[in-house]
Length: 546
Image 1 (cartoon, rainbow, N blue to C red):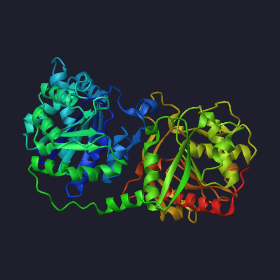
Image 2: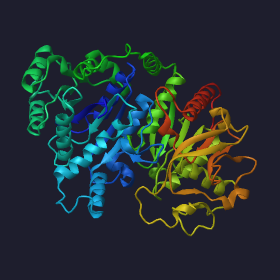
Image 3: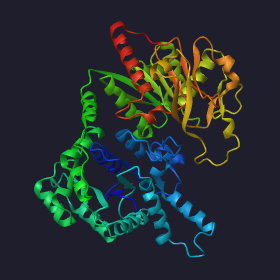
Image 4: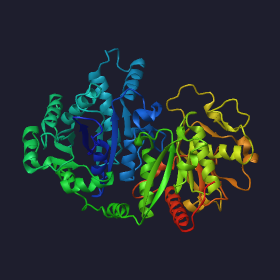
């Protein structure tokens, strides 16, 4: 048995309390004391992974280096810890049941009746312990999705109960994140929902070791004592998690509350060094004290839900701090951009990012956005579908290929400048079959991207089925539009640049997935720098839009 310690984070009262942020914040505090930490997420839905889920359903689908399509919380884990996650860090009920059923079909259960207990719970325990068996980590934090009392999460709660029994209380602890609602009519915070949530957890055989209480108002000493007494936890283990300005404040708030100290004491660990959050505090200082402000338009199809573009938004925050500028994101729904009003939507922006997406809806609006930035020399960043829209716009409006399109949108186009990848043409199943994960890209010497990265070879994460059609290489890439990044194995065009422009880059990959607090992504940093320069120039000289 390994010496790895396990921390489980459960949720109560309501969903969306921020279990992922609390887990990532605790991990950051432990990491700052030189503990080797990682986080994993167990989701109770029956999908094998979130790859086939609509962004409106589940927010962004995050992609890891090894090609796993995962929950967006893994993005928070990587951004906070600057530690890469993998397939092993995100498990769904669908994957658990799939594995158990496959074992049953192979006859691995020796003819026994397959049941939730012990077969499903054993599979869950195996997945929980998998990362700990590598010997790479001192502490593994496991976030259990959903809310205590949900039918879907019961097998996970039972698996946790068994692990506490099997590994001992000094090796496993449970943190219960709950809500302390404020009733304005009564003018007071109410603890009863939390008491019921803790009672539900105890009925499943688990005693919460630490309570983290989400609240809009400060918890009084008396209220904390009441929670400690009625929920059977120590007074110092009642941790306040008050609403803050930004998620990046949470680690410092949790440190002030002593969450890491209580965890370390409860697990009988000795800190390897004093917490060092110097870099984190420096980031927050720059983030909160910008010297100027810029407006960047985010043109996408799912802008109603912020979580749909979570990694892009966070990457802008990281890049803004580096440039000591506040990045104000103006969301623009691509479906509602028309020929008549597109100039009004774009003219006050300092830069535009055309976001990733799938399907035909809103495509023409994205193309109009690209045309606007190309003609008016507004800094432009296209990601995945955004890069493909830049190619289509150039084909139609510069090369005169009026019918140019992607076969994803029109399989009858005369000029399929974007086409289904050859490796995708015989694929029937949709789940987990895209071009996924980290791939190499060779940068053209002297190109803008080679200067930005400061190297000739990069690795970036992908999630797509369609690519630039290399049959149009000779037609497309001329004096102005250049292919500045190519996959060395397949020849796939990864990056395009428009030369007659201050900053115009489209990338087939997703750079936002690799931006972290300690290592902001160079493309986002450079884009924000260009946007700032454009903004200052616009104020000084004035610019007319066409």
